[in-house]
Image 1: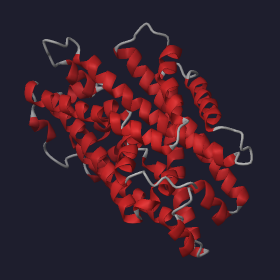
Image 2 (image 1 turned 90 degrees about the vertical axis):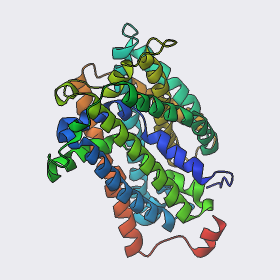
Image 3 (image 1 turned 180 degrees about the horizontal axis):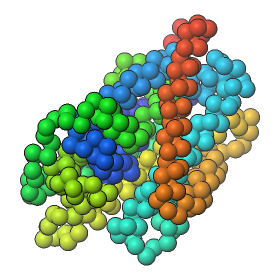
Length: 373
């Protein structure tokens, strides 16, 4: 893999953050509260801790093959046929996650602002910029992510302002731990899905390996910690802003409490907030289209004339047309459950299998190869 020595650890951190923060930033407080009630924020922290364990496993796997992505070392460990199946599997996984992001983000936009705009138009407006950026190399994508990171800061600033302006009741957080350990863990499962995006380390590791293995672990850990704290803060803000009865029926509590803000120069602060949020949705879409493009490039490596742009457009539009099929929330939830199940396979099971196989077979990159990387 061609090394890009200009890529920094900070860019890796921001790449993971921009992938993790997307649709879930609006709905996570409601989803987690529905399970663990006032301890929802503890569930978010627990999910962050669990994600950190998985990140460490992915890092341990990556450091054994620092100049290769999972599409390459899976063939070394399991053989060409099994490795090809794994590449196809990650391609399908990337397409399905792209579908989920498109479906839920379009539903929120249609509910809050563009009520009469056809669904296919809204999805097209989201997928086109993602296609344009997703076909690029890591450097170009990372540079854009660094620029738009300021929007995440603005989202947090608006939420902090709400806590000072809107009447809140901190008693809704107590008694701490009343839901019980098992219920908190069930809530962590709900939070986990919104934190997906860290698994891109499986394909990003070789692009950043020149920074050193410790720098990579530190960068991804920083990203996970940042996302966990952001989600925990938004969850706490939602809990103290709404009563338990209100929060049960408010699917996007973040938008609801932002809507309560009144600024003389801005009549609908929630629309401004959602505009910032859309950028994060597009970055998440871009990252998973990048996953699809990388997988496609390795599967069809023999066809050198097949440009990355063709792969991105084909799989992006394929995901677009699939996302148009579900018409009801129940149908979207079914697909969401499928993808959640698949995530356990592609984020946890396969990497663990490959890590075990690398130790059993004692296969890893030679020291000479590591030095060249």
